[in-house]
Image 1: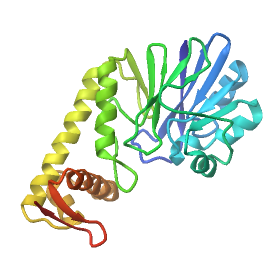
Image 2 (image 1 turned 180 degrees about the vertical axis):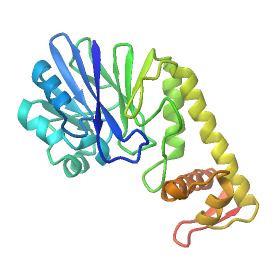
Image 3 (image 1 turned 90 degrees about the vertical axis):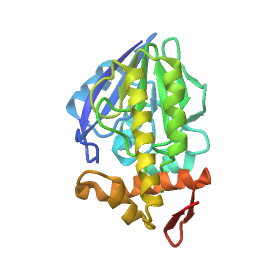
Length: 260
């Protein structure tokens, strides 16, 4: 199997300003993943190779913009995560034909396996296509991935990173930015980054910072004013994890946190 990447300029908070769409080809069949928008290059690739199946790693707006258009034009079988059909239809404007879950195989080539990798989004999955893992917003070659409340789940994200690390993939093909050729090192770096952020959040709470805004100010050692909403959402997601582990007390309605 072979996965062809097309970088699609789109409105996104990712620093690349683009989302990667992938066309996986094998055995005469094809799978289009994450068509964020239409571009001439993606149109040409779709016209040349055809699309038999269509799926997304998750339904954030910067990954789904051209799902409906390509589904109509190609007649592709549209897949979505089981139990998320209504959310998928609302996000993409098209109803799914089939659903997948952990371990489902999309019939392209020797089979494209679905991995459950929530954390960045509740419905997030990755696709194993031969030696490639199309990992969406699970990982990036540089920097980090936003895992922010209310949708993000830090515990689930760490589990997803560690599960993928244990598989030892050859390459990761992320939703934003270049191919990741050192997957295990990158996944380990992202786990370490989350653990470092958690320690900073917990230290801030133990120092007496009792609101997400105060914790954000204390936990970040750099200027995050340009992305403060994302930084604050990240802090809340970490507080939620710490509360679930009974390491802090968290009142989500009052937005007050204190150490245990």
